[in-house]
Picture (tube, rainbow, N blue to C red):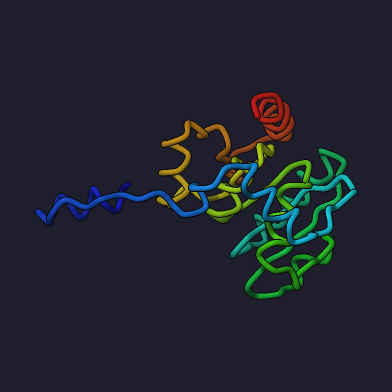
Length: 173
């Protein structure tokens, strides 16, 4: 939305906004797709961390969340396989259906990705988006669906806030 508003300020023709295609299918539709492809469900209790970028600060924060919630962390995607992830179970060879299944079977999702946030909401999973204040797409999604409480800044959140957020999100989903 923010990008459209910027374009309209420059007197451009009206622009239609279409939802991301991921939002066009229901939870049931996505589950049928996964079930039809015989994607293996994860049986263990875990936190999924899906990120397109990672800083030392983010890595330490996610590790802290895993310890606070007493769950192991799985990371499935990272563009620059780096040494940050030695604490996590690394599953870098996953495809799109595996990605969806990890979200579907996780206990909690931590994301820096728009689609990880969208699918967490679709599958009614407790989730937070970490350090995405400057991501207009995620912020627009949160505004549209009243998910602002899913946005955490690793510079500001305390341990108590993480636990309270996890409990509140889990109750509200």
